Image (tube, rainbow over all chains, first blue to last red; front, side, top):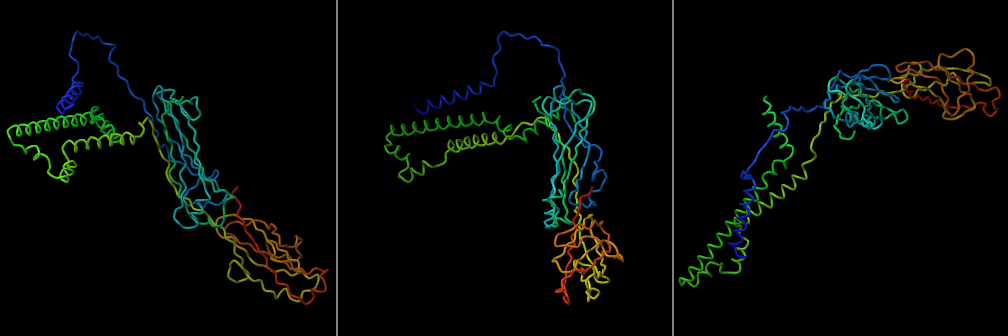
Length: 187
Length: 255
């Protein structure tokens, strides 16, 4: 096949490709309107921080920055988040992530204290427009009006059995915990 | 901001997040450019061949040979010379590679999601330390109790002396006491000032025995009584027996 033939075939292919976007020529045609114009709105899913949270040791309210934790202590942090969810078929999951514990510095006491403490998070979802779905941990929107709250409880444990003297006078930072809402399709 | 502008910005945001969304519509144009260059190159080669044939027909015998590179090296160089067709072909191949890579790196499409965070805090640990102090000596990890009061003891004698223990730090603790080694003397201790009567507690042994609790940042007097039992062996006569009392403070969890 000589180059002219190849060129012609390539040109034809290019023309066909270009013609693809040009639309069809009109022959007899007709149209009728299906239904009236409608406006459809999308739902929403948002979580925002509510009132400032509270740190407690047992039932006593504490200020973490001046509190001295000792082995056997359990500190809890409770905070409420506002949950805005609309959508007739909206399903979502709620997860609570505890703040990560990290040594405040590379000092031995800090790293020991960080190694001997741990944090966990639990949460409770309450509200007038949210209902539990079939799958545990999945919620559905029961009404597009109303408010709901997510209360997260973050627990920092300093187990008595795991402690030793090296963690005395250490400093740790407890990072930001998080509440995450994620839309899901599984009811 | 108008809704149309919001939509345009949203579309731009989508393109920024997913480069493949920006590149994919360009693919047909790249292909068309590649085809066009192929056609032009074929036409140019055809015209060149025709002009050589025309020259030969006109009696220029060496025309075809002159049109080809004279040496083998020159022909190899000619074969490797970048032509418009090769450059565009390479560009098209590169574009295809980019599209495949962008498609793989595109990630997932976002569904509805939201996150809010709790504030970060710093927490410090407390501490616990115990010091012992005899009389006006400096408080520290060890203290010496003078033996003068315990000299020339006879069987049945009971002599007590006092020292002070202090808990520094932030933790409540329990106290235990033990002896480093047993002697012929019975050694008893009790929190508080020495009574005038003999202590009735169990004599210390080398096994730790509970002695009560001590609160953080407090101190207390401890009485230590040495008793030479009435049934002491004759071999104990005229001997000395140094002893060491070891007091441990162990932090207890806050109730």
